[in-house]
Image (cartoon, rainbow, N blue to C red):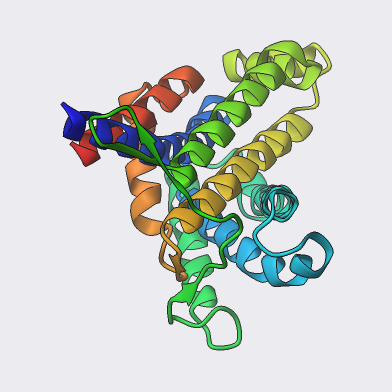
Length: 266
């Protein structure tokens, strides 16, 4: 029983990361009806953003502090949100009226471009990099059965839960969220009602990319070795999670990610 609970906690922590990535897939599909296969690479860019930001912010916030971790997380999310908006603007928007196969091939091309540019020696290089420690790690003993919970697992679960609540608030309680749901339901009718489709789609890409960046920081904090191809497998697994939960369904994507993480650790 102790081993089962231990693996369940490990699986939920890993599944939380898959859930954050899967949300980006499902939101873009809900609005545009295509899969953004470059999303896993935005996850990788989020990890590298944290890698370069952490040493520069250490002087202001101190080593391994809550302020440092939160600032690295926030700035990485902003950077990747901007990258996601730029990918949509320059790669996908010109192809919006083209066949879906054309957009799918472009998405794969954007993914490969990011991966191979990242491997250039003038960018990230193909060698693995050690991700800096943002917060000290501690183990907590739960009960007398020997169940051990690491602080990084609690951090992942806590941040993921907070981001999911923020996402739910944005989607259901804000005007942009209402516009997202309207465009997802019927884009031409939404445009006739005065909704700016371009703004909604760009916002969707930015929001999904910000969640992928958060997932990249959390993943790199738990598995502190990053490289330009690190987003391939988590991205594919998160895509499976999105399909498992019902592609286009936000709660389903989150649930699918958690379920996939638990299955992987079982």
